[in-house]
Length: 91
Image 1 (cartoon, rainbow, N blue to C red):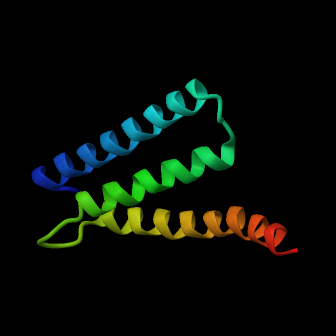
Image 2: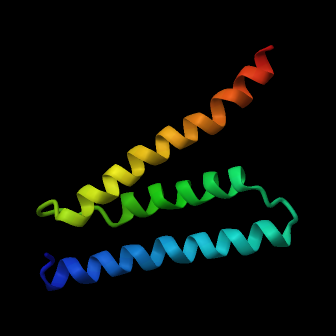
């Protein structure tokens, strides 16, 4: 499924995203601002940043296509979180 370089890039990407998510979880609890919505938003921003940093340059591996689908789903969830709050502000 992966060749050697792609496997290393995949695990580096997963480690970076997981590290960001753990760091944000600890930070949100530390500053007493924990909510599932806020945690999703900061975690999703970390995923987007990691996606920019680790984008493959030569060819698109299979795992990268799956990351893209996770990002698309994340945008749908983000819209589900943001739209009701936006409507509350307008009304």
